[in-house]
Image (cartoon, rainbow, N blue to C red; front, side):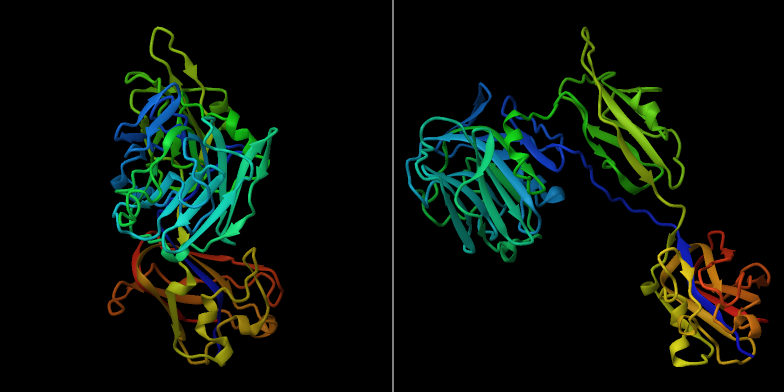
Amino acid sequence: MCRKLCCLIFLLVMALSLTGNSANADLVDGLLIWHDFEDLVDGSGNGHDAVLGGNARIFDGLLWLDGDQDYADIGALADFGPVNPLVDALNDFTIAVAYACTSTVEGDGGSIVVSVGPAAADGSGDFSLATSNDGQYIDHWWTANLESDQSGVGYADGTVHLVVVTYEQATGTYSFYHIEAGAAVAHGSAAMADWSGQWDQSLDYGIRLGSHRNATIRVDEGTGFFPDLDGQIDMFAIWDRALATSEIPEIAEYAPPKEKATNPKPDDEAIDVPRDVTLSWAPGIYAPAVNGHIVYLSENFNDVNDGIGGITQDASSYALPQRLDFNTTYYWRVDEVNAPPTSTVFEGSVWSFTTELLAYPIDGNNITATASSLYAADQGPENSINGSGLDANDLHSTVAEDMWLSGGEPNAWIEYEFDKVHKLHQMWVWNSNQLMESALGFGLKDVTIEYSTNGTVYTTLGTTHEFTRAPAPGAPNYEHNTTVDFNGVTAKYVRLTANSN
């Protein structure tokens, strides 16, 4: 007597994970850092506020640097681990910086405007964007360097110039742009530099403007090599993508709304969010410590968009009064409220997230299937966990080689060993469905199911389970029609023993 359990068995287990990223259709998309130097606050809402060093100061919307160990740290270097790297060799990025300088050096050796490097002064993988009087210069220490000259343009004229650098990781290509007659114009030619071999992801990288290099780049080149910037910086920004040429002219007129709530956690459109998540955000700069935030949360987009049912908060976070539902999309927004007497309300954007599923499939790569016997080498027990025979809609084929078929002994069994002990929710079963099924009846009928945490001591799950026959045996597009509830038992092993077919 042959007995057959047809592929695929899903064993679903509780799990938690957080993923996702925000996406908007303008310059806020992928914005990591924004400084306009009206203050030291990071206008992106990501918390990378500037800290001044040396005699650096801000005045009249500019960062003033005297070229003698003045600089601005974009966040303390020691704090960059969780967001490291902001600028790296492994992802696309865009740097925009508007600056004025006094350097009349031509070509290599101009003043450093932006430096990126590890907290250790002698670390490798540094990146420097320098300015000379005829263009810009990028240097990856001991790895690569490239220039982009703009013939006939003098940068040491006391005028603020906006320069944009994009990097595309797939090709290792850098492109330099400036604004001319309201359009983005590339200066110099695009150049390639493979920086990835020098990027050390184990280090905490920081960013300095105007650099004094003692903390971010090598110290053994001498005081006159790539000197600090003598000039002003009007704006500095980083995106985690290469901006399109059409977007670059918008930078000069763009300003993130600092008075609004930003940087939502969970991220906008995040999935697999825990049901007991605490919502948080970067507050607007004018929100007071008391009653400064109004939170809206609902499964209904219109309720949030229309501002129905707001809850006033002191802190820039909101702990849910009860757990949310599984696998549900929620919409939320935060309005920031100015301090009295004006109490102006700055309406926030509508964000969303989707909560975790009730259960998740265990990957077949994390399951080992064994059986008491097999009928043929190409009909082994692994076919019940490797997805063979299933299409994108989880509908099964009629091909015998997509299934497991036992060798015919009484009380044939198949056992699954997981990578670790899991909390089990359900098992889905597709019974035998090969072309001969309607005549011979290979499918399992009465089945004993046992489970174990150690592979030695087994517990029977309920009583005997009856597996349903394929609804049209031997017909394609078979949707699973047997579901076994495990009700949260913990197990590393599950064994199915056939009592009849």
